[in-house]
Image (cartoon, rainbow, N blue to C red; front, side):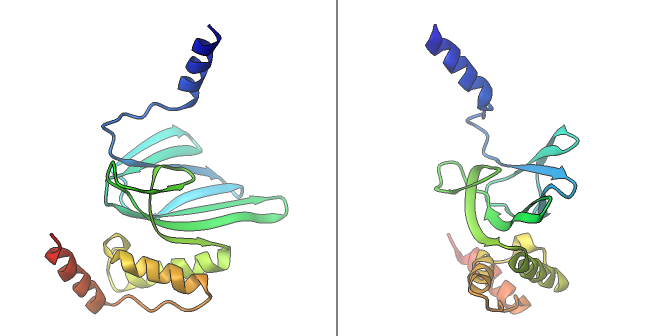
Length: 173
C-alpha cells in the first residue's frame, strides 16, 4: 500500500511526457526584477501559458535558440546566464540544462552579466548583417563562447562565412 502511494505521488510530481514528443521544452518565468527567463532568439513551434508569470515554449529537433536567465535579490544580481542551444533529435546525446527538457546541445554558455552583454552584442551584430541568428553556423556560437570565456573579443560573423556554411551544410549527406 505504501509503495503504491509513493508511486502515485511520484507520478503526480513528474509531469507526463509523451514518448512521441520530439520537442524540446523551455520553461520561462517572468517576475519583474526578481526572476526573468526569456528567449533572445529562436522560433518556438508551440507555447503553453501556465499562469501570468510562467509559460513553456517548445522547439523542433535541430532548432537553435538563445535562452537568457537572470535573478536578483534585495542586494542585486545573484545569477545571470545565457545559453545558445540546439534542440536534439530523440535518442541523440544531449547535455542537461535547467528549465530545458530534455536538454540540448549547448553551443554557447556564459555566466556573469558583462559576458552576457557581449554575447548579446554578438547576436545584435549578426542581425545587423540581416541574418537570423538561428541560421548562423553553430561553430560561430562555439567560437563566441570560447573567446568570451577567456576575455577575448570574438571575430565578427560575415556574409562570406555564412555562404560557406550554407554550402557545407548542403554538401553533407
